[in-house]
Image (cartoon, rainbow, N blue to C red):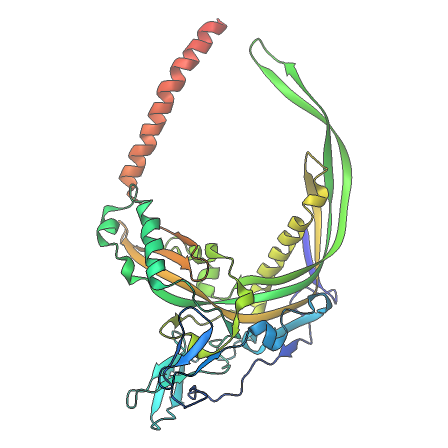
Length: 409
């Protein structure tokens, strides 16, 4: 039985007085220029954290999110819910934001569901959403790509090559890894100051013995001492990563395989920089559409899993294992932030026989290079191999069975 509570004894996530950490910059939307010359032609320098002005060549480095707002400190002192400006509840469904160009005065529309930047169609200045808006589009931090597109393409091609034998022929013919796209996916990071109480039964083996139950059969038994086991302890959890997009939290495996995105975890979120739209560059970004209350129960389940894992060595003496019968998690305090994490993504639409379309995805972690995905399968070849293996197994097993029966007679 699992029962998570917060420090006030009410279900976790219902603390009445949350604390808000202000991560707003005060920078006006649309004005995102070089601090030296005012140009908006700003790019990232390679895979470093340096930003460089393409006009005057001035360079500067964004600040780490944890350093800027102290998010890596004081986990053991957290009480109730603490969250950053970017993780605040979404209060607007509007995705279109109109910006006034600081270069020529024209008005430019940015679709924040897909991007936080747009280029003015008159003077070519780049306009950006620089601060928090109430639709969840702007996070607190961003983890820039370090895996290049060429590297991602090579990893995806290698992933497919290893699965070519069973892959659908049409997929192999149409496979174009150059179509891979870089996208920033929305997540939340959460720190947890939690207490756990686990109660169950552990067994210690005392004797193992075998009893003859037939002419050619025997059964192995064991004796064990059974103990009540109770563990009551506190745990400080730093930067648990939680999905904040509804499309990947409620998976429909009949139409797509986008759940593979979460198999790319973990990310080195300690290297996160405070949000600066200049780090997005030409990459697209997906807007967050889940609030903390929508994902807190999932985070608490992971808290409990981490609590169990944290005492694995402590209960190793129970060599027959421990069966937990009662589990209680108390969330004394939590701290939430909204972040963008980098993913290279390749997609393929498979037309099914029933007229439905299944979207297969292959994804690469934009930091570690870890690759995972789904490839449409040639079901005829798969069944042929399966039947062949079954027939081969039967061809070996049946003679052995006949020999065993004959010897028993």
